[in-house]
Image (cartoon, rainbow, N blue to C red; front, side):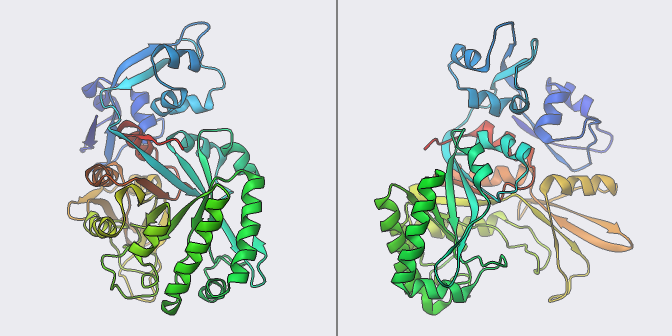
Length: 425
């Protein structure tokens, strides 16, 4: 396995020849268009097959997997196009094993809204342990505000992936409500009404886990929030469900701010089965241009989490997105546009600009001009994801949580599949 940085004058054919891999392999693993268009400074993942098999009459993915002592899901991770082939094609060359084998297994979670593109979802599912469906809210009277998740769950429940229900203070308008959350935290009666309704919903729909995702909690509600987590965990455990709690990215217990104060890492970590530390959003919609998840701050947050919570409970957040800022940045005025990581490369290609890489934050970026205005884009690529996977391997945390699965990012999944096998619950 290698990561190649495109130079001026490179072609996809020349790169493929240099590494002894097929052009189609490079196109698939990096989600290039069929013309093989590449950009100077672009990072390409190079996966080198070590063991391959040519499909013969009578073969099935199951028979091939059995013959090589592997699984159908592993074959699909190595050959993602198989997801969309109802019958494997005679003569098709299938990669059984790369020169790089998975180093360890980990719990791999992804968040998704029910309207996620179905082909995209099917492309991502073989790499996941769990899928967290966003999300359920509640009214002031304790009625559930459910998403339209029936079709999504029908797909997931036919795979090895475990579905998780995400519960938050999302209102009918789609916004987090600190006031509604406060009402829930301070009323055991309201909690029990909501939680037992959720249990019925989870049993009916096939959910196996419960994700508590409350943000912007009033500081005075910190103890009540912890009490809610304890109550929810007791009820969920009694009914056979596991519990995850999403935590704002802190570097000390004294960290001030509406996002942080109610998230007591040690106390919550002692109750929950797992926690997701949301290690992203340093670069954000209304903030100054910078990397979404710079490796230095991410490492500090993970280190603090591990000082408070056992590593087998800690999940590290991974952003599957970037931002496009119009310059100059003006605080309170500039609003960055959320973009996909693959689309960021398309912007660079369409504008004929090279991609740069910041070694301190370990994240790619570039400038370009649109309609006379200068823009800067920060995003994730295979290099920045590799630095985060290395952190997972170094620290031994339980796994990763992707926010979110709604945009394609082929490089990420190809790299993840080469290094990590998903823990199956």
